[in-house]
Image (cartoon, rainbow, N blue to C red):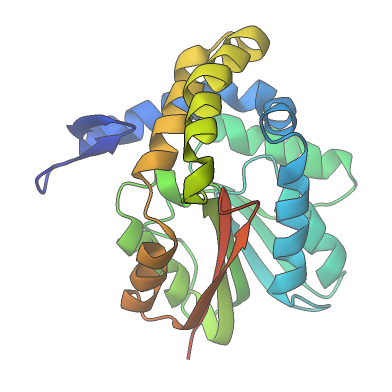
Length: 245
């Protein structure tokens, strides 16, 4: 890759082409996103997200930014925590995903502020949020370092960034995980969502995403301190946490 190219799964593409391709993937899967999450993870994504909420330390009155919030699982959980005196922003770059999330929060009786925006250029002031989260969204961003820097920028001093993302699985499990990822996952995507290609991209994008230590270093380079991480389900997923000082 050079300065004008990046990866889309295992392909090397122009940066502007990746944005378009990622948009096509999530526009395609938006309608079946929740049911596919349950099927793909056997419901474990709910446990991973619940752990993220617990680790966040968010409390009543806090301001929270949910980046790449999709269908609003985290936003809804945070809304219950911050109460009427707090605020949770649901954001996503993809209109189809954000529409599903917006409808879902309204159906649950919440009137959360919603914004369609690019994580690399967040439309929020400096030092504004107590907590910023991004769940299963960072790996799809073209300039991850820029997105991390933006998320740090909008955090208050003492605020924390939580990154929940697929990571590097425990090595003895790699063969079974590869079989699941490249055979079963596209088959499931085809049967349930009539879209094998998007779920093949998902498997490839996971392999191209930085591992636990690499992402920790990237967060530190973005200016975050006390960065640590928690391996979940043998490293299939990792939750990274860093603070702004």
